[in-house]
Length: 168
Image 1 (cartoon, rainbow, N blue to C red):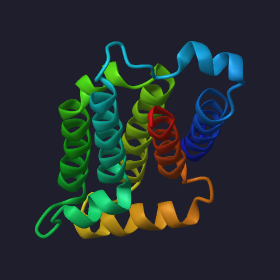
Image 2: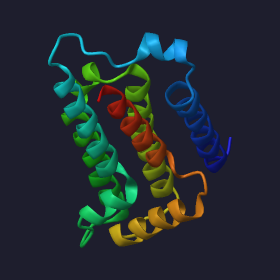
Image 3: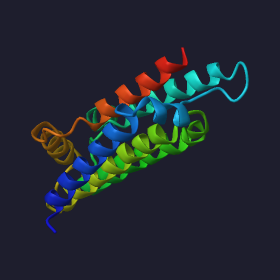
């Protein structure tokens, strides 16, 4: 299967899953999966977890990640390594927050991470061997700008905000 077709299918599937499991749940489904405090006073911890997840989503959104990552003197392959390492490090740093948020929201965050890693790897794989980190950054931003379905980070951010507001 063509890589771009695979990526498009992946984005569609993730978008549909986020929509149905996070945004469009019936009231009965919400009762079983709502983020309810396990103990009195734990709402603060849950709100902090949603804040950290919102920050994580913002930090691993590709344009923001590219803007924070210096590309001077790096090859495209080295830049891809730095970007993927940054995403994994950010995610690993926040992995414990999953115990405070709903499983559906956590899965949406994980899917965003995996989608971004896939995009980086696929764009890097079609770059010429002599491509620079700046070339890769431009190619990634161009890919993102030309993909009308590339709003998964917005959907995940909205889901996190929705879940956090339910705790208030």
